[in-house]
Amino acid sequence: MKIAPLKTVECALLHDQYSPIDGADLFDIVSKAVQKSGIAPLVSRIATSGEHVHVIAGNYHVLVSQNRTPLSQEGFAGCLPLPITNMMMPDAAARVSRHRANTFVTVGKGSLPGAQSNAFLNQVMGDQFSFTEWSDAERAMRLCHAISRAVMKAGKVSCVHWCPSDHLVSPEFFAEVERGPSMTPLYVRPYLFSSVGHLRSGVPIGMVGNGAQYLIGRPVIFNQAPVDLDWMILRVSNFVDMCHLRGSVIPDGDSMGADASEVITVRHIAPTRDQPLGSYELTAERVAKFGIDGPQVREQRQVMYDPRKDPVTGQSRELDPADPIDRAIMARLKEREQLGLDKATDPFERDRRAGDRDEEQAEPNIGAPARRATPFGKRQ
Image 1 (tube, rainbow, N blue to C red):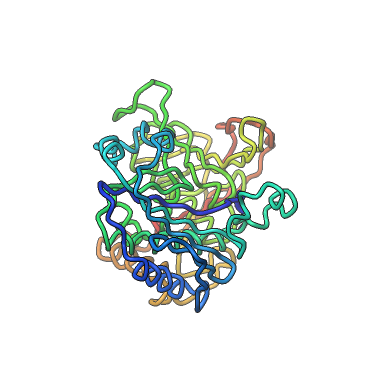
Image 2: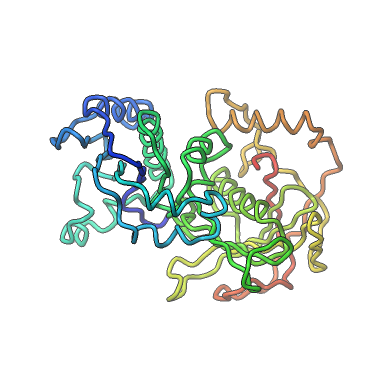
């Protein structure tokens, strides 16, 4: 799947004091993470000072620098003031303010470290030094996360800045996210907004999923709706994960939902000067849980998405306990079975009636009939 060009995957670990890992131990951490990732069986070390580790691993290069100075406050200007940052980590400003050292993990593409910063090479080579396919970017992100987690285990970290999505999170969140069904909650940072000027229970809220452009090619915008914040954040993650499962973005005008009580329409918004990548817009047309009942939504049959089948062909497949995604699906299926959430019902499918639509339209046409639904309830 094509994504917006991503030059490097970077993660900053903030420390209250400078206490570097021994260079040999740090090299061992990087080597083991690379080998476990399957990117390359061996790494080639590039000469650096004893406190840093720089290696070539296949078609990737990895730099872990241990710095005895704090990061500039300007680098947190985009994430520190955000409501989501302070909801997740109320003392975020204090943690950033008191940090005195950092460990910076960088994973780049190609075996020419520094090429991304060379203006001439960038002009000649274009995006060849950038991640432009999700499969490559995902490997780099997982490697960056794995190295960062290993460094965290070796020394105290006050907070973590995941740079691709500009997401500032606690060490606990950073560790816990890998135990979930996907890493999307880290890779996509919610930017919340509301036309009423504040974010309180019961008022309409909207969300921009920053970082989604490096997962599915464009940012994701969930239009304002009177729903719970956690529900909206989860549905954006569900949308991204479903696109990855099916190997392509849910088509323009189709809809998705966790079950028959939800219809969330997907629109592909064309690029503009202000938004050169365009966006994927989600609109809650009907969500019974929050009393949203769009009269324009018609339905005949719904086919529940089954993660044990290929999302494109519909062919059955066996879940692999050795695969982390399949393991998460199996755990979720077991949990839902215990809760009685997947009892058999008469299947039905939502109407896939195509209507005239303007591809350049900036806002979704709320009056348009929903097309094919893509439920994703088993992976939420």
